[in-house]
Amino acid sequence: LTEDEALAQCVLFFTAGLETTSTTIAFAVYQLAVCPDIQDRLRQEVDDCFAKHGPEPSLDAVSKLKYLHCVVSETLRMYPPAL
Image (tube, rainbow, N blue to C red; front, side, top):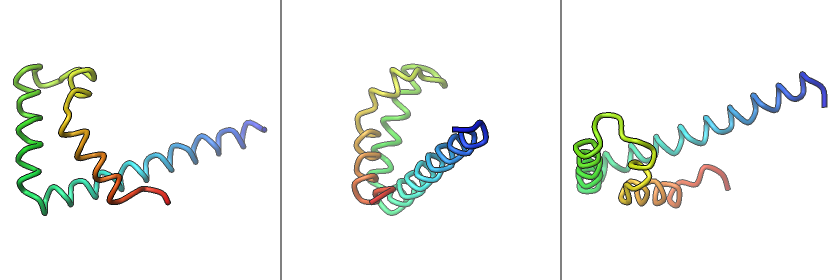
């Protein structure tokens, strides 16, 4: 594997990850827009996290947001980034 080929692989991995992440976020935002009850519940969970941990919660604090995990998991189930 040449240096140019290795660089091309890195760019490919980055681009592929960026596309799947942005697609998942777009579908999640769409679902939150059409399901205001879910949006409200998620907003409350996030607001509670900010109130407890400040404006920059740690990764550990964010990883404990169970409803956020459910929303992301359901988005991935409904709109898988790859088949």
